[in-house]
Length: 476
Image 1: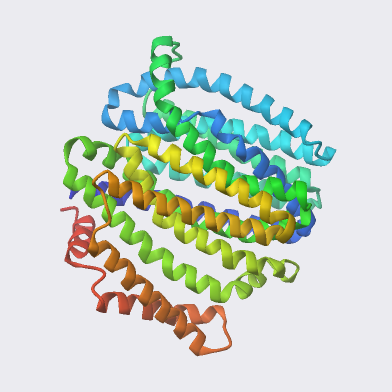
Image 2 (image 1 turned 30 degrees about the vertical axis):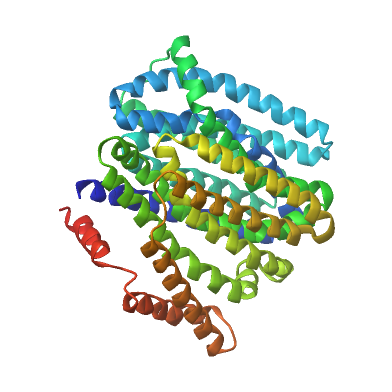
């Protein structure tokens, strides 16, 4: 149970960092959306999405590989860091040039091009930061990553608020994102140098030859996932303009905030699952199964509640000019549910040396998403791309369930039974919200209380869960 406590500690530290940083980001994001208006917010969102599509090229999966390998053998840390810094310099330079070239080919307006160049620098900084974060994760020293998240959004927030106070234009706010990224890169270098060891540059071509092919599946899955997360905004900007991007990105920003939950837990369990796959298969299976169940407990009621209250949520957060975004939120929230449920399977494949499975599945998702976008956006605009996103995530989930059953890690009858019970409790919660009438956000609190009461009565939380939480708390 000491491992459970370590995972819990890592999760809590990352959770704190994510909550604080997301809270800061939510504040300046909402203020920025209201300040810029739908069109200005759409322009900034287009540039962010465009540059983010290229982010996987800055690491090519090497950071994820480093986490897995260093978690198994801590003595490899210096070897990976020394070589990855040199590789990153080459990858970052190439990525910036590629971004500039594609932006030129797409003939974006000069203002959008300027936004893209500035945000490309932010992406480059993110590549270097990812190297240090991968080692923090491998050593399970999540507090440093947590502080980095807070520093990044804090620095961005300061620059954003100053720009709003001074009445500056949209270009300034792209610069704000770059400031946040640069600050956390410098911070990560200082922390690693003072708390771990001094980085020593190393060029070991034999090492490169070995790790680059091994990291390729991580790189491809990261690229495919990033494309079908962000290509929709790029296609919207080309086909329908900045307003459509603005209406789509308001709820999409909310969705990205919610994804911190599986992101935090996936990051926390990665080192332990990597170790247990080789040494303790029962513990490996336990983490995977519990991860899936807890994601279901959180995500399914979230989907139903948000569907019912989408209009109130959008108007409350972004204001009346974004009321067209409510239908997009009602659709995108189900993409979020599917992502939550998929998270445990993706970690299962990656930590069991089956990262190629993730690559193949995300490739299918990317092709489906782009195809559906090209079909649906011309006719349904941002509603069409919302449908494409949800349909893609459902396909990815179903493929993960199928593949896991083929590699001796299927969902059991108990797992499926728990999922049915969670669905029933969630529907009862939704019915209660409707029964209250005059739908409003205050109805959430008694509805959530009812939901967890029903879960307890249906014994979805069993004795093993209770024992696990007790040992986490007590450190047994």
